[in-house]
Length: 181
Image (tube, rainbow, N blue to C red; front, side):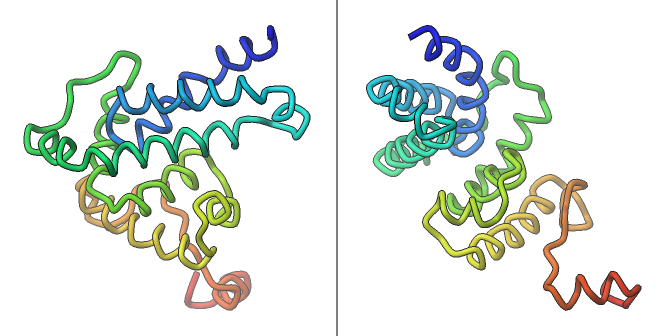
């Protein structure tokens, strides 16, 4: 099990940060990731044989966190009324501000932003992981960027890391130096 221990040590903090970014609750994120790793440990040989176990563990942790979040909706509403939590150790103030802004998004938008922009997953993989279409993911990303721009105080309505999603025609037009560039 040394390989599991090494994998756990190398990935647990990043996965907790990812789930925390989606849920906005550090305790829920830690619980979901721990449960996901417990389930992974039970089928570790098969997960490793299939390739990288990270997506499987991340998906399980996200599903557990979302399920818990839905069950405790009243508790979450009370949490929002009392303001954001204090800074967590090892989390930069910018990260906490981003999490606070992400909390204001719809859950499906928040998950799309985290998977696509923070994990750099392609839209198609985000669609597979969320059980959505690529078009739905793109729509969620566009709406989430606008909302984040507002929540983070950006008057341009998009964060500095904004990467516009262009249609094929717009990309071809931009390559020729057209007006859509």
